[in-house]
Structures are given as C-alpha cells and as structure tokens.
Amino acid sequence: MIKNFSLLGFRMPGEWEKQDSIWITWPYNKKDWPGLFENIPFTVSKIVSAISKNQVVNLIIKPNEDIDKIKKILLRQKTKLKLVRFHKIPSNRVWIRDFGPIYLINKKIKKKVFINFQFNGWSKYNNFKLDNKINDKISKITKIRKLEPTFKIGKKIRKFVLEGGAIDVNGMGSILLTKECLLSKIQQRNFGIKKKDYENMLSKFLNVNNFIWLNKGIKGDDTHGHIDDICRFVSPDTIMTAVENNKKDVNYKILQNNLNILKKAKTINGKNFNLIKIPMPKAIFINKIRVPASYLNFLICNKSILLPLFNDKNDKVVIKIFKKFFKTRKIIGIDCTNLIWGFGAIHCMTQSEPSV
Image (cartoon, rainbow, N blue to C red):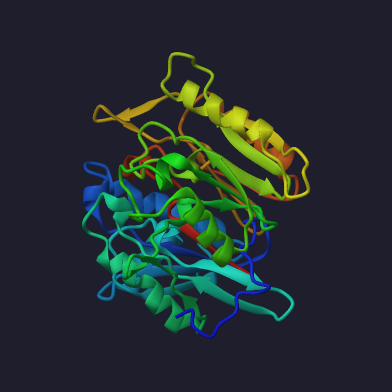
C-alpha cells in the first residue's frame, strides 16, 4: 500500500525510454473474437516473436496450460524462446495495457515501483476479476513494490479506477487523456470524481502536471474514449495524432477537434508540440460492427516499433511516416485485421516495463 512510501523523484517514463521487458497475456477468451478466435494465437505469437528478437517478453499463460504447446506455436514464428519468460497466472482477457502494472522509475536511486490502479472491465464487462488480480502476482514474481491509489468520497474510501490505455505521458510532466473516457457518466470509472480530482490524483501518482484533455475517442472503441487509439507521445516534444481525411466519416470532426486542441497545447516549457498527422485506415466493419482500427495503437520497443496494419492503402503511407521519425528503430508491421475484432490492437495487449 502507499502508506509510509514517498513518490518524490519517481515518474512514469515515456514509452521510448529503455525497457527491461514487455508483458503480454496469452489469448483464451473465444468470446472476444467470435468466429475469428482461431487466428488470434497466430497474431499474438507474431507479436511475441518480434519483441523477443531484442528484449524479454513476460508471457502470462493460464495455470493448467501446457507450456510446450505454447512454445511450439511461438517457434513457428521463429521466436527467441530464451527471451520469453512464462508465468502461470489466471486471466480473463489479453488487454494487459489496461489492467497491468503502471511502472514508475527513479533513476537517481535506481528504483522501480508500479501503480496498481483498480480495473473494473472498463465499466462495461463483468468478467474482469482475474485480470484485476494479476498485478498482485506480478508484484510477487518480480519483487517490485505495488502502490494502490484510493480516494475518499464522503466517509467512504474507494480504490481509484484507471486503465493504462486511457493515458499517455511524455516522461517530462505532460499527459494526454480524453474527457469522454474519464469525465463522462457513460462507463463512469470513478463516481464522484471531477476533472480537478483526476488531475490531483494523476499529478500525485504519476508526477505529471501538464494535462492535455482531448474531447473524444474514435467510433467503435468500446472503452469509451481511450487515448492510445488516437494520440501518442513519441518524444518529449512530439505527438502523433490520428486524422480522418474522409469528411463523411463520423471520426472526421472528432479528430479535427482533437487536432485543434493539440495545436494550442504547450510543453511544460511553454513551447508548441511538434505534431505528426497519422491518417486513419478506411472504416472496418466485422459482422456489421465497426471496430476501432487505428495506426496509433502501436508499441515502442527498445529497437523496434510494432505497427498495426489493416490491409489498407494507408498502410504504406503510415510505414513511411514512422520510418522517417523512428530512424533508429525497425518498423515491424503486424496484420491486425483479426485482432481488432476484439476492439484492441498491439498497444492494448502489451505493457512496457521500463529500466532504471
């Protein structure tokens, strides 16, 4: 718990900073990809393989799983198994970005802790209890201390609910988030909490003080407005943000509105951010349901970028943009046309563990 522990000097780093590992949860929930689940282990194994080329993957599998069976699947993708660590922990879903540990680092004292925000299934789904306990196991396995934020409403003390995909930081005091996700009464995470309360809590626990509130997320996002589908820091002063070029698409006005907010946003030093526009893929419907396909749901690794692709004409356009910016990292495209049926992509299903 937080008692008798000072967060002074700790901060949540930018994703491009050096990492020790990436956490991933193996897929089991067939209901998340009705009709397409058989393709999902293949996609996840490609992601694990790509990461394992250069850094450790902490892979969570269910307790009764046959590890050799998983290894065979991974080896088909030429996964470097010596860099994959298997952990037998019960889970509900793969979206560990949202329920996994939010790491803080203090480089002066070479220490790392993590915030264990409460997870409640995005205030939408009921099967989340196993996912909400995963951080307890991770803390014991890694011997990294976990802190559990609470807030007081009246006389009641409640655990603070927050998903990792709802926030994005630049490691230097700035944070991106949306009003739709955190301030709406639809899928409300923390009852009785207002904008100022969020800012106070996140300032205290993540060491951020420059809040950039965008309005809405994209159509099809069942989290009700996660930031990691629309807007990401890629350096302390650079933001990649999604734009929709089809004026008839519902996302056009949403993303233009967010772009206008970003144009006025400042760094903690009062300077404008460098903005890189990332076009959206054409709207994707699966079983007549729109899914939140976006190139912004990418993962930054130590030596590579895992970029979701959608068999779209903009795939090549976006790869060029990424190659131009991420000059020292290899851009690895991953076909996410099946994965996105679960309403998430690469960033949603990974959680970065930074180095100190």
